[in-house]
Length: 523
Image (cartoon, rainbow, N blue to C red; front, side):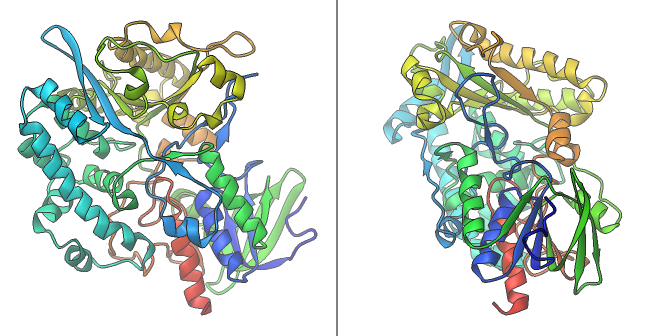
């Protein structure tokens, strides 16, 4: 049905894209009494923050793309009255390794005493644990000072530096490649690798990349919630976007799925948005347009020159198991190891080697990845029968696999990468993972993998980049505007992950775009 049938032909705000940021903006604006229309290309809202049943005939509702929550401010949850909760993981991470011919590893979590003992077991002393404490005490202080600024007008670099009020932390995080701090503070290769991984999620970079894009990635991964904790969304990631959609509708916003925006015409004060449905084309007028899509798609819609896409570099794998596999390291319970982030092939040198191989155009010999089990913390995503039988989910996120590696044959390279990635995991298991995989109604193993090219095709992420573009510093730069959502068109705002302070499941760009509109309208 055309969007205007039974509704208005003109709105205060039209939002292009019904992902979580678009829904946040819609809810804020509608609650402020503005008329709002959301145009969503797909048959459902949620974008990459959705829960689906990917395996035929199996009652497992998985967070198919994005999967953990850290950057979503409690302010947004409170402001919008969302029926949404997260649960804290008791274990932060487990990283297996073989040393001296024996399996061992590093378990971080379960209390200070257990973590201290785990460091001592791995490294033979107190030094690395004390360095770890000092380093994360520093990032914790930075998180407390920076995170609240994400929903405020953009500070200048100097203003943010004053807010941080720690010259050593500023140098480590903002001025020098993060590799320098990791190497200066930590001696153990495995510990170094665990620290570095937060700088490489969805970011293809070396620890010493002079662009500091790895530093920007690291910063966003350690400031969430003012603590850096990554929590499990109860009910899966779709529970958040379902709650946001409900909040937007209840406030009066119109959500039109199956409506693809194809053009935005604007004179800076009024706009017309042309959209396409299965029944043909239509158009709707708006005072403001908020684009919850990539900067590339924004340029296409407005007729501007699209920026060069930032290449994605990750493998996302969803699995359902009949049971968790046993570990070679018998001192660690699999239920603890997989409840946090389970690091595979992520020693410091392994990460450097994988990056160098991928940069040279080859798949990493030992692909690095990290895994976690959602259902250990939140079993509600599984049907009661599966819970009773002991089924568990596994989510795997692979690093250092840039989109260019898949250009020659996406399907074949995906299969090759998945096989070698799981082989790296199997090296630390007492039984093959394949023996633990569940099967669907057709007898096929319950496992699916998504490459950057798959994400580009399915979600229109340019280059398969999960952040829409390289992450930005959380301060004002040339042409960023007051809120970091402004474009060269006065009444067109970017409210997706490609906005300044975008990336991750945060709702921050949606909040900030709504605030920019309301400021202009005086509401």
